[in-house]
Length: 115
Length: 112
Image (cartoon, rainbow over all chains, first blue to last red; front, side, top):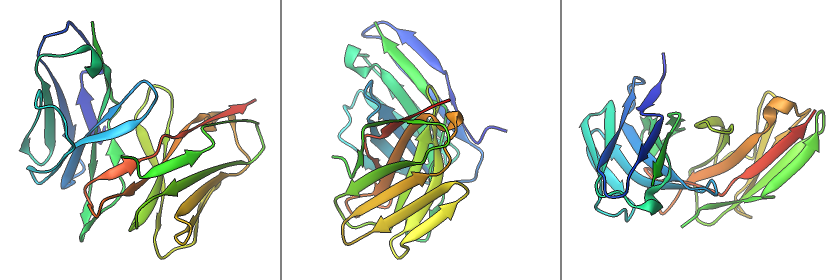
C-alpha cells in the first residue's frame, strides 16, 4: 500500500485555468505538507498542516489554497495558473513526536506544466 | 531561505568508491536529516541524526554531525550504480518544528 499518494502524477494545463492536486496518507500522521521543487531541484516548503490546522504558510500567493478535510488528506487548489507555477509539487507527511516532527514521507510528485 | 547548503553540487565517481557529501546549516537544530531523490521520484528519508549525536551508521551510510561548525557529512561506502541520485540534507529551521528546510542537494553519479 502506498503510504503517501498524490494525484494526478502529471498535469498539463493552460494559463489562467484552475486545477487541484490531491494527497492522502495512510500512515496515521499528524502533519502534512506541500513542497514545490523547481527546475533546479530546489525544494521549497509551501504549507504545513497539523491535525487539519494550518501551521506554516510560506508566503505563497493566495492563488494557492490548501484544504485539509481531515488529517489524512491535504489537497492543493491553484487558481489562475501562471507559467511560473510550472514545477513538481510534492505532498509529504510526518509524525509529531513531542514538540518535534520526525522524518518526512513523500509522495511521488505531481509534475505541473502550465502552457 | 535555505537552512542547508550541500557541497559539492555534483559528484561523479566509479562503482566501488566512497562518496562524501557535506552540508552546512545556519541555525540551531534538533536533528538533521538526509534524503535521497532518484530521478523523477519523490524524496526518500535515509537517516536522521540528533543534535546530541556525533555519528550514526545505517548500512553503507555514515553520517557525522558537528554542531560547533554547523555541518554534517554523508558518506556512502562501496558505492553502486543504484546509488545514483540527488542527496539532500534538511533540518527544521527558524525555531519551527513544522518547517523542514532542504538544501540544494548534491547530484551523485556512480559510473559502472
